[in-house]
Image (tube, rainbow, N blue to C red; front, side):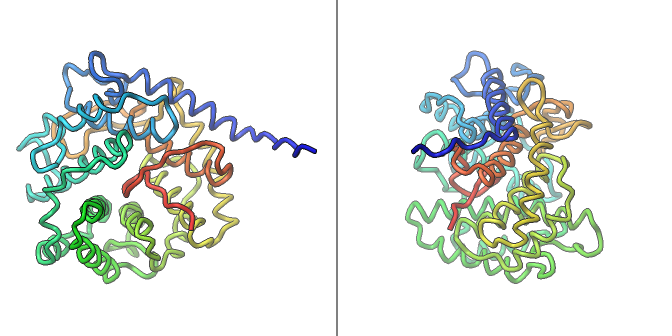
Length: 371
């Protein structure tokens, strides 16, 4: 006797139709005359005027294509193209983002630290997606193996801006993990310091890092968003997160509707991992995820990509007077982030139906394995 056929779920069919549409959109973003997979940020991206932003266009497109199972590309020329943006010490830079044209903090060293860490983390994520196990040049991060240098850097994290610092912290944590994989045993001590700093400064009532969480709803939202980056290192190191349940409680207060590509994926990331690792408020979490999924699918543009939000201007983070385009356009950043959220939810409800290829190391797009 054969087993009865599994009932089709119209929502799962919508996921597959959306996936196919995005595969086609990614192919349409190919930059002319460059290796297959080098991608424009959006249909509005003028490559002649703004060649530098092909780098973020491409690293997001590569990781998105890998995640959703787009046809494989020839990795060698694409990896070589990505690595052509690498400085001698291993940092990746967006061409055109030069001294005097960037700002994140009044201290130029902090500005460049944030930008370099962020661009390098994502560029390395794309390289790893194309060439798993390829050794990275991490010379720039080796100074953080020294406890004094690391302690000084940690002491200067500004938790009045927890979202930005969450990026800094997870990016450095990922570099330390990669150094350890290359044989730097001192990275174990550095990671211990990283976790010690976090557990001294975490807010027990929320599970987040950041000041002013109880006085300002916006500050609480930013603390949540920044902390979701830090949580990835806990997941990757298989380390229980203190007050994890309180963080899940907060996420369940957010309405299951579209906010922005970042906030939406952070909420899904937290709830899916909370479900996997804690099982806290399981029924409510499943209801929330099931309610958000059609909202995410409904956000897909007619061209097959996704936008971040509908109004305003989208800029390359930290670039003053640099690349900008109207919000509301499908772009590789938002498309990748929205597919992370869709794929995480889909794997909860239809495990194994799609071979989602999440990031192998920490950063948005990383998903812990079930334990």
